Length: 489
Image (cartoon, rainbow, N blue to C red; front, side, top):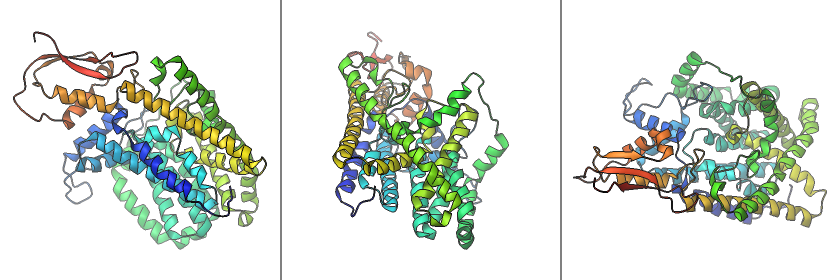
């Protein structure tokens, strides 16, 4: 939405939002993928190598997690954990630092994009209220890093389209290389940007060819172990028992990132299992209000079609926003092909690499609406939407904090509570008999083992006892765990 001048209030509000996102890092999730990534970071940090032709005290991990379809993802998230481990083994501190970095980078990218497109900074504030940004910023997971990097990619490319600065183009090239090295879903964002570059900016690519070649060479040099491994171990597997139709339709729900959940999927899923009926009803009401973002995205997609067509017909007489419409629609097409062919659906993290394209659709829909409805009505709609997001996040965060997580494997007992239980276990001898009644640790024993490795015993001697690890059961839904001695042991 065009405006005569920028106000400071939206930018000032971004600071407490970023801080709030990073509060209570001990409430974060710690189930299976997070321990696997951390174990890889620990293992390679303890191994010296000369993989790049020089002696290094550690070995950069050559690859990341193995997906459910058999593909190995990129090593960049593991590298980030390796760097953090070099400074601290305190996972709570690592999550806080990660959340601050994640949220700050995302907010800066959104602010940059809004400034380039001359949109209101209030849209940036509202976008940062996404419950999925709150959830993913606090998760030691791989694909979540696609969120800030994809936002930075689109912001840098919009800046390049507006000003043709070489620095912006270099950022674009680096982000295009990094996204697939975080998660392969980032390809759906990278290909449309590269296609647009080749179609409309070949002269700029040629003018900056040496700098681009230098950056690409550095990236290939850093990531060649993963690239070599990927090309020699690609084994695509598409499950035949999943619906092909849902995969093709799922990209129409790209506005999922701007809601409190669609199709029964909510942030921190499982918090609602034992919540009071009034809390569930309040959240459901907020959830339905937040789903208005889906309609905004669909409207934005419809508005983007003629603008994208004008880019094809008259590229020199179109605006930056018109070119981004072309890119965003191309991203949606790529997402559709990816999800349809792979039969992927009903998982919000599939949008981590493309969410910014859907946010752009919602932005241009809001820009279109504000010119056609009364200002007070438009502000009331936006305020109601923002309030629904705040209310929903508040309910989820408060419930998880009170219960110490959830009893489901979708979120699980919070990492702070798990660390406290491990630290208590460390007060006893390693020869102690421990009865693990916690389903989460029985299903995913690596979560416990990694915590034990990062929390070594601090004193001796330690008595040998018969112990039990179980839920505290202080009330319905209580996910806190405790360590107790068996009487007489």
